[in-house]
Image (cartoon, rainbow, N blue to C red; front, top):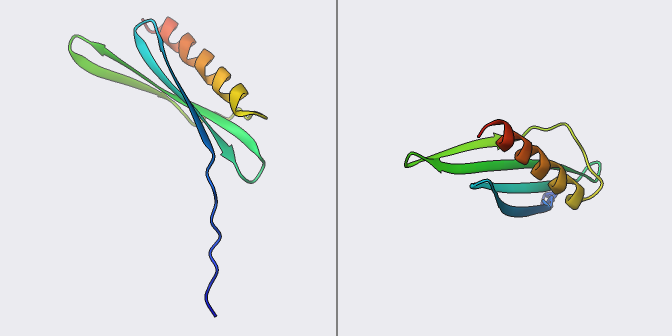
Length: 85
């Protein structure tokens, strides 16, 4: 008898935008166990010819929709950029 292996489907959405000369790559992923969304973002920019980045990850916040998760992390990224010109 062949062993059956459960396949988990990862649902992920992404949004890219520029804010104050920095690229925000925001994403939301669905937690299959509780059907809630988590968010994260990567902020990248060039300064003095070098590429820099900052990650927003491991956030404890959960959301009912991917749009809410992305909106939250985009606002969080914008706040980080404003505080770190």
